[in-house]
Length: 305
Image 1 (cartoon, one colour):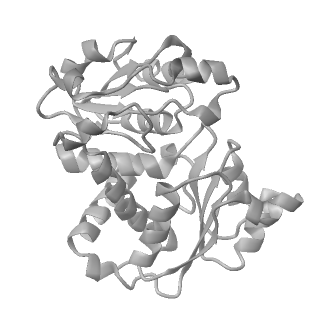
Image 2: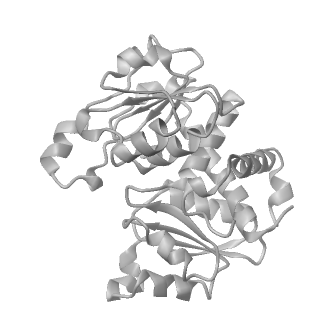
């Protein structure tokens, strides 16, 4: 594996290898604290990010490496009209590995063909977010001890949510997975996810509008925000943004073993009162993002402890 552009480029065996490595990093951080000494990660973020960018930087520092890059395209030469290919080809002269977020779908793939160093897709438009998916898989594995035989509910913006698309694709390869897709009709999962992934592989799923009715069935609830930046029409965003708000009351019929995930940032879709519930693990999820990215950086740079 030379780059990570799409989670489906990884086999389930490769994903498990990264999960196992991340678990060892969690248990033995000092063992890995110097493995990337002398290595440089470039974070090229053409679109705003807090968690993803900082988790990549924290991951590289945790491995003893260094970080360069930018968090706003206005501070790069693309503001002067430079192409993505030229930007990454230049940065590849300064860095050993690149993590790139871009608003245009496919931009990290284009970058990977020019960079000369490994490229990690840190999110491209509404398309893919493979390292968030790895974070989600590590989180589920740590909570459940397995990635099989689970009923997973996705709630909110399933149309534009790249984290949703990536996680459905990844989990569709595990035995005994069932999906419940909870959204308003306007924000349903794209049809290609239904036809090319779920129906093609005979994976059971339901498309519903009621969160409360679905709650008792769920092992995992993956909440998402309605993303203002993906809407063409402000009126549509305002009408849909508070469709689902998770509160303690709505969890009354949920399993005691339920795990609540959210890729963050949160807006209104989870009440802060839910944070006290032991089933709310979205901040554990944030911490897991650092460890799985450490494992991925090591894998792509072919270093080991």
